[in-house]
Image 1: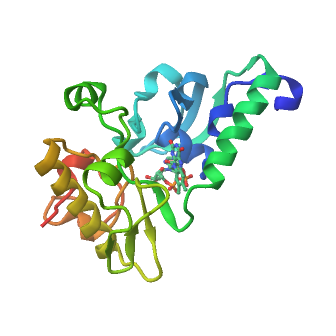
Image 2 (image 1 turned 135 degrees about the vertical axis):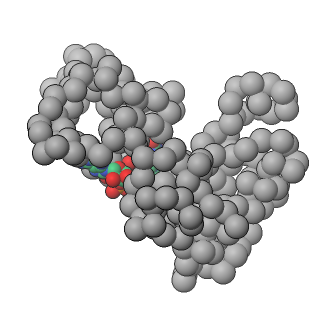
Image 3 (image 1 turned 90 degrees about the vertical axis):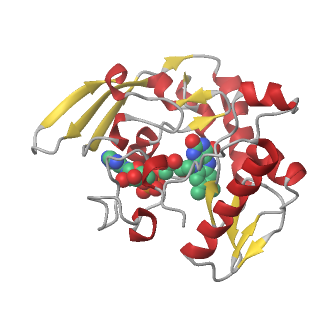
Length: 223
Ligand SMILES: Cc1cc2nc3c(=O)[nH]c(=O)nc-3n(C[C@H](O)[C@H](O)[C@H](O)COP(=O)(O)OP(=O)(O)OC[C@H]3O[C@@H](n4cnc5c(N)ncnc54)[C@H](O)[C@@H]3O)c2cc1C
């Protein structure tokens, strides 16, 4: 595409996943979101009807879309890309791909969303990065529970250091959240989506696992 001079998705180079997953979670690269270029989406709804939704109807925001709340399957996506500075876009794609290639394998990607600008100002932090908090404030780089370990190179990544179980992973996530709340009065919100009975506890309708229509924060049963 870039060879044809078509730009608009260069910030998402090498983010793992499918187009459906990218729209479901409104993937982002730096300050850019895929929602900027999504024009239409064809979906199969719960009544087995195929419908076309405009980009504006998708409720796309940070890590969020209507697909978190409605049982719809994304069949195809129409993007509105544009002819732009292909040379510059190639550089951007190259830099993002390089950055992605340095991120730890055996992980589910960034564990937590970054904090808000208001919290950054309140705490006088140099960045909104959740990784900054984990490395410099909690000093949990390399911290391990079972086989789940805070990456020593990308501190917002929890990696499988051999034989991590879902419980190891989620216990570590919970500990990071507790420590952050205690030290900074911030609720770190997971960026990853947890699936399975393990997470759903006694929330009605969620016993079988899978994506529920209940917002994530209400679904999680920590203890
Ligand atoms: C190493 C690593 C780096 C990452 N870096 C980034 C990053 O820089 N920026 C970023 O935004 N994300 C990043 N991610 C997160 C991830 O790639 C995206 O969130 C993406 O959603 C995953 O897509 P997938 O196709 O693998 O979806 P899956 O993981 O298979 O599914 C994710 C959700 O999307 C739903 N879904 C998938 N396809 C469809 C469909 N066709 N219709 C309806 N629902 C569907 C699934 O039901 C599920 O709930 C990273 C992940 C990893 C592991």
